[in-house]
Length: 461
Image (cartoon, rainbow, N blue to C red; front, side, top):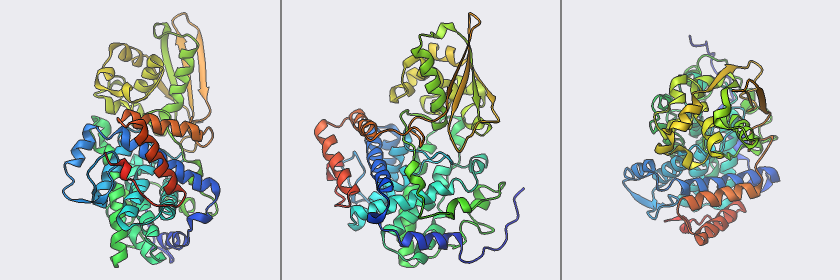
């Protein structure tokens, strides 16, 4: 049953955000926040390159009907800003290796960064505008994910798709230098573009892959529409027919999570960068399995593995349990805890190769996944922090406990700049780029992050 909603007060949530976003100057942001923008740029570009030859990207490229001046990273053909942001956003998110936010969860970088880059190239904006857009968009998307945590997923929607459309719109409108009212209108417009259901979990179909790409192109279009004077509801967030009533109807929203200390504390500073190419909440459990393997335990030694999990993760990562143990394809395997834990233990890593179709149906993997189950731990701190704990029973009767108090790559155990640069380079090599191109584009990213020209000509091809 939907909750009752009263008439919104003025100024609305979107109007308050608009006032803040209109006043942002990237050069005056804290150094840690500017660094977060740079790290996001580099990670996103590498992810786009890694997926540039993927079948789902090829399919999306075939729907791009008009050329333009905007870069689809890793492709020679320049596109219009809508198609470029769709392609880049989908490539960055499509292998589930992109950034995430502990507290949501939500993947926003793969919507906000592609939107910012597309709009910058389309309008000839500089790196200062890009960084401004990234920080505005990430703050709104990530903070928005805490307004009604878990409720959007429970309603059957993908937060990364629906929330990031509003974040990308705010990013684009701020980049264009629109006034606070037009920024609020841009978010109001994006509310009608927001979409993305999570039924892909049933069969591993491709729709999740383009959710953030769709949000990116929606944000670009919403910003450009707002610039012309097109209006959207200023009560888009809290109105009786607004965003949270539509996408999270069964939980009372707390808009303080979105608005309190906005502009004085930047949640983007703690954005998480993935070291493993699968669902974020599984990572600490994989690390437990990797530690077990490093101690010399063999698959044949194991009688059972019980993961102690948050109830809020079960419907996406654990159930139906039989389907999660015997996955339909390599893509849906990315959202299966038993599969990811098993493949991490057996292969010693969880990268792109661990999700090809041959590996997804391997007998040794299925045999170990069949031994993995879960119990709900009411003390698990999800979604505020991603942790992992397993109890392993060996065939000789001995019991081993493993626990990870933090997600590797997250706010409490972040990847270093060197780690992230290595990830970028590895992803580019996986996508088939040579060392010269990798270095040239890395320098182009650094120039954008420093406020210079946005020139990604070297990234075409």
